[in-house]
Length: 220
Length: 175
Image 1 (tube, rainbow over the protein chains, first blue to last red):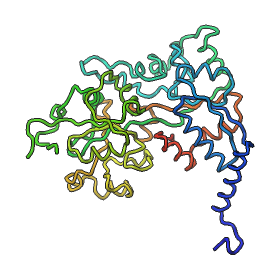
Image 2: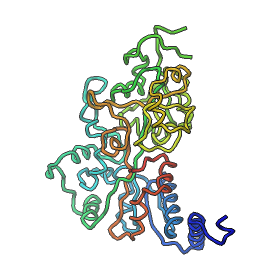
Image 3: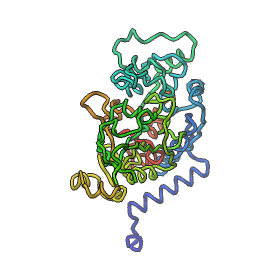
């Protein structure tokens, strides 16, 4: 109706401009943006830059995939504007004390310290098994004592990374993988402790009755 | 006929190489997994758990209720038959609907009790405040010499298109 009257609706206008920006991008006239990260994050970077192109201005993504343990080296070479990473990449270098990574390392600090393991022993620190996070990063991040932050060797990758932080590197958590645990309501369970969940998934507990679910459930 | 002596736990998990599987095992420090049925799609896990009264499973929070996940309105209980309904309305109208449970079409999101008496659901404050343990942060590092476009793209993620792009990859965007 609006078109027949010679008017352009805001939605149609936005769609037209989006198509124009995409055409510019296809013509190679997008602003180049170099990003590196794990290979699995390519699709996210691609979709985000496409969304930005549609809404704002054309950006041509140049993505370089790399394995987690080489990401810090690649980024420190200075060819990339953005590094996308699951967890802090510097942790894999064996130097845990970078404050810039602290924000990414709050995850699970209480988890590691709070609960006892299946054998009654304290849980191993969560970060021992977390990719990209050195074992003591969580403890360092949780501490307010700056003396706990070790000094990296001069010239090492960790020292270069620290220098990069001093010169204005910005670090942001932009999202997360979140694993949700769900059960059938007939179990009556609404909460589990970490140890219960661990024992369930490890196969150490195979009967709901061991977790306090009464008799009488029926598996069909 | 009810089995009064054995209530076997039936586990449903994503594929071994799925990031959610790896995340759960790493955070729980599990080196050898127990018996579990591996399903390719989160929708299959939801359906399997809804139909099996002894089932437990792990899947991406973005797939809970089979819709776009916003941590603020994560349903504590849901139904695979009512994906199109507003979960807030559902929670208010029928939080413990026995008929729904009897029909085997429901699931419950389980809270994790990291501290005694304090169960934690994967809500936005719990996830990004560091309380909910089964998370893996996605971090963007912006180089000091990066053009302004880099910050515009990767730090302004509140647009519907950007949020949808993240959820499509199974990533919960920061609110």
